[in-house]
Image 1 (cartoon, rainbow, N blue to C red):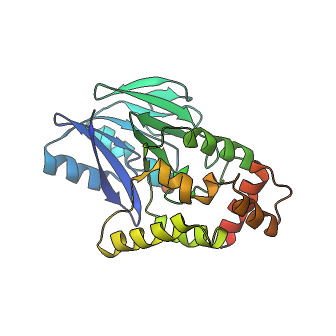
Image 2 (cartoon, rainbow, N blue to C red):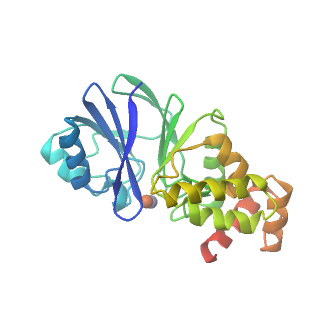
Length: 251
Ligand code: ZN
Ligand code: FE
């Protein structure tokens, strides 16, 4: 399996770097400059790019990277992606640095959003975040809830490599939804320690997301009750998800 690390970009983006034997892939290079700097510093040859969705902070660096070295770009077929050479719909299996990677369709944040799973590593772009999930720019609550269910069904030890450092703010909201959830309180303390030390809160483990992320907990009585107070039309998981997501937008 390849090694995984991140390249920070912009204010709070993570560009994931996959490397094996001096060969590299990057996931969602929103900016080329920090990627080129890292490749040069570590003597890595870029061999390909994975894209989760079309937003500029995820694909803005692709043009410059493929101008420097014309590498394959794996990207959502349903979205407009610079340099896309391998359009994907979800359900495919691709090979990255000799490793098998499953492609999953996870619409909601955008209509064609993809996630990539390699062994115990999930690269989920702006679908699932530490203690949160992406905004619904193009999809419906039903689509996003189904996408999150798909990710929640991965093995508990899966490492969640999301594309932004949003965990602290998301945990403040998680506490508002479930003020008595001790796992959330414990995570607040742990993440505060990491951030105070200048460290990343990601990747997280899926088991921890299942215990603390309100958007993966739409069948829990406490989350259902909170959603009903916020105007959920009924107690179904999609209605609960829709109410919690709308509440998060104005939180
Ligand atoms: Zn996005
Ligand atoms: Fe983003």
